[in-house]
Length: 377
Image 1: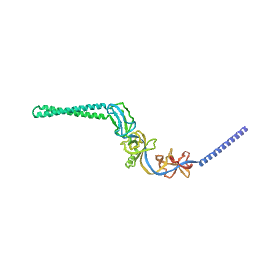
Image 2: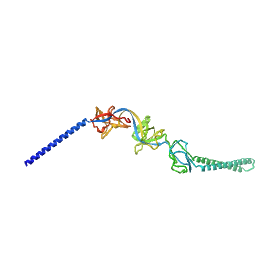
Image 3: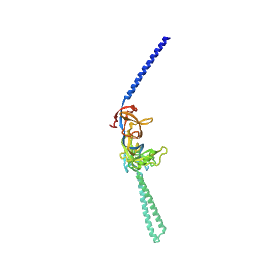
Image 4: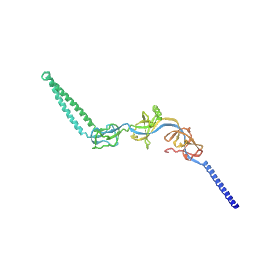
């Protein structure tokens, strides 16, 4: 029993020694790791916080609509004899688009002209009878009733001539419908009918559609809480509007011309419409665009690159570098314009902030700075 106790005591002492040795090695490694962390230098890109004029903008999604859109339809029941435009071509007001078969109407015109000539001849005869009976009545050689009947007959022929003339004018109008011209300037769609097709006045589908391309409307919606600012900017004539097509760097500029007179109670949004000159036809009817409504320009705004702003559970922050040491600085971002953020609090301008490499940083980390690359450089 004494020998067994002695062996247990030796084993316990050996185990305690191993534990102490491992703990000492782990402690040494932790101290070394912390020392390395304190000595570690992280390469980062930095930029300087600026104070400069920045626009106050509202971004929204909008769509392009033509100011005028005309559906070309037949006004007579007949056959198409010619199509005079290329599908999708630009047309001017008065350009010939379609020619319809008007031979039946031309025949009716000839028939009506013949009826008018007949009525005029009969009127001439009735007028001669009136003149003859007038002389005879003056000589008491014929009853007055014969003169009255002659005058009545002359009035009948006059009425017939008037009715036939009205019919002739109507037929000429109908014949004019056989020549279809463009009522506005614009771009025409593909022809829905071709030569030989029979068209009717009752057809619901148009033969073609012309959309006015310049100018055009761009309509978009904004929240009702910014409506007072928009109205003030319009009154001060500082508001401008740009439309940006996705995938295209070009911008189309215009002027706000209408604010809808009601706010949609279901969404709390109000519709605004701008008129865009669109002389280069950059905006196409039906296109979804991004609209930028510039209300005014703030002369001295604190601006940082948007890549410098980080997000945490407590809000936005940036890493400010001072003496090659990064420090967390909470900020409040008021708005973003392009790739830059306007900061309303937390920065005063002139500070150096980290724009790339934040994932390896914590407050107090030493850094090796280099200027951020200029876009496109």
